[in-house]
Length: 125
Image (cartoon, rainbow, N blue to C red; front, side, top):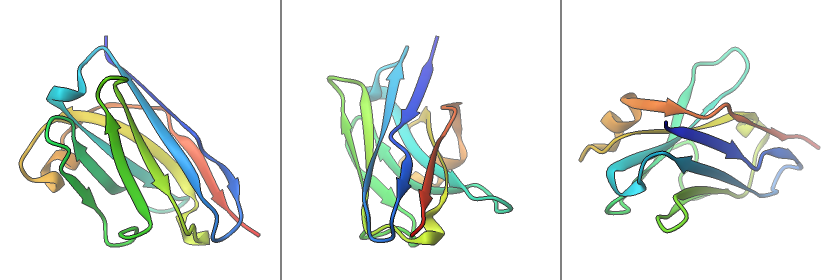
């Protein structure tokens, strides 16, 4: 049984940082892509980053490029999203998801099969 546990959210001031974690069990990262998504109140869910579990290739949405960094640890079957220089508009529930690998990360983000329950990130002064 595949389980995704996302964690690490919290309340931070603008300019602050958090480290979000995604623990995956039941499947090996070697065969999956892991995506991070976020959904703010009243807005559609947005795929912000993705990593290929086998090759480590990455994707970042323009809205977070240069501020967020995704990384994987296949030995621990975990993926982290380091979020820096946070802005108030980054406030959202962040979700981790797993799906099959595709050469195109945008397609992988649309094909996620397993989801975590989400972790709240609030950026406020």
